[in-house]
Amino acid sequence: MKTNYFKLSLIGILFLGLIGLQYACESSTFEEASGIVTNPSYNKNVKPIMTNNCTGCHNGVDEFSLLTYEDVKDNTQNGNLLCRIKGTACGEIMPPTGKMNTTRIAIIENWAANNYPLD
Image 1 (cartoon, rainbow, N blue to C red):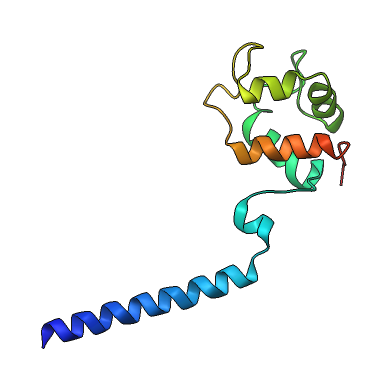
Image 2: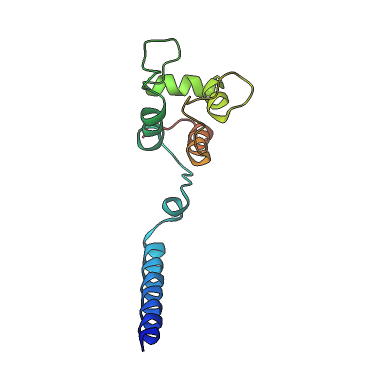
């Protein structure tokens, strides 16, 4: 008898999980589900990345500031920002706590490819 209750409980839990997963997938966009943002803007997508990963050090005090839209745009256009966060042969990888995940890097690359929209 105990085995039957266990099996029924397990089947019930799996069934409810599948139903929940179905509703979660239906209510999310592809971008939300995958982390891919095809049309990012500075204020909505890039600035939070800079705030969480960069501006603690690159805050306008040194020559490599990432505090403003213009700072980030200029350092992306000259190749320095993407080179540093991608870890290519241009110096120390940033941020120093470890390489950014590929989703964040792709957001910055897509922002640049779309001519650096502010909003």
